[in-house]
Every structure is written in C-alpha cells, then in structure tokens.
Length: 156
Image (tube, rainbow, N blue to C red):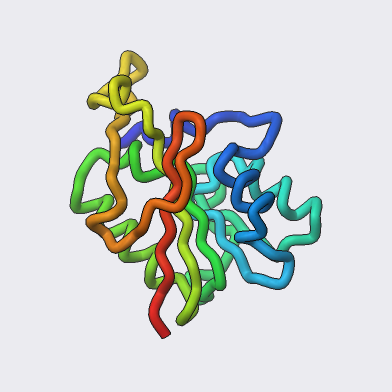
C-alpha cells in the first residue's frame, strides 16, 4: 500500500509553483483548470477565491470532485511526480495528465529540486525521488526555491 498521501501538506498559503503561475499570468479565470494531485486543496481554494474555474483531484483527499470525461485548458500537478515510487505508475500518470488536456492546452508540473534529500524512502515510510520531466516532453519553465516547474503544450 502506498503512503504517498502522507506527503500532502496542510498548507496555510498556496504552493510556491501555483503562486508563480498566477503571478506570471500562466493561469487565467477564463481557463478550465484541473489541479491534479491537489492534496488537501489549498491551491484550489486559493484560486477559487479569485473566481478561477478550477477543480481538484487527489486519489486520497478529493477522489470524486470532477468527471473523468472532462478535458481542461490547463492541468497543474505540484509535487506529485517525486512521490510516485514506480516508473510505470509515473509514466501512466503523465500520460493521463496529457490526455486530460484540450488540444493546445498546457500542463504545468512542479517537482522538488532538493536532489540530495530525495533518495528513496523516508523515516515516515513515504517515498521521495527527483524526477526530470524533460524526457516526457516537458520543458523547464522556471527554477524556484526548492522546486523546478515544467511545461508541456498539447499539440492541436
């Protein structure tokens, strides 16, 4: 049984990658947005407070908040890839995110960048590893304090 849900942080403020995306106008209120792996939902709550059209999905905390048949202008996925233990599940998750995008839609995926601390199982029994998203067709968009933010645009 995976313990990935234990890595979800109860945030008082939105995540740094989500704040950066909003500040840089990578997200707009007119887009349909999915926060994939939203954890406890602080990023979703924050953007909704500014009337963004956003929903969240998390297999543990928010498994049924939207319909799987929808497609989105934007999919965000913050600090999820580095807690997925196996490459097959990671590959499947990335394909799923790409599949949820409308043609011309954009996915933003952030991963932890503190590579020295990301070396497998933690004392809590959770898993952390560094993930380079470029082999999956993503380009590095921004390096923040402790994270890297990647971008993928789905072809038309």
